[in-house]
Length: 66
Image 1 (cartoon, helix red, strand yellow):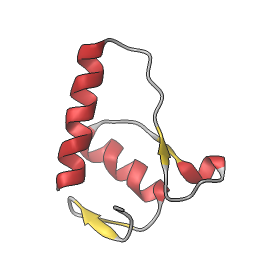
Image 2 (cartoon, one colour):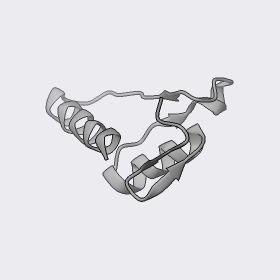
Image 3 (cartoon, one colour):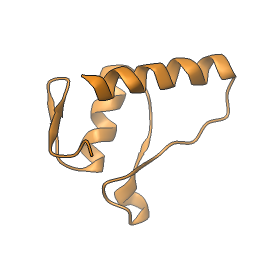
């Protein structure tokens, strides 16, 4: 849904670009789906407090709305 669009000031055409832009702009780390044979998707892993997760998902929401 977000591939082929600009997110912030970055054109995002694949899952690698999406992950890098999200990390650089919002400091949220994800893994590109292409690493698992699923281009167009990302994978998130988490083992942290609910407060940290809420902050990360808030930043992800901001990123997707940009």
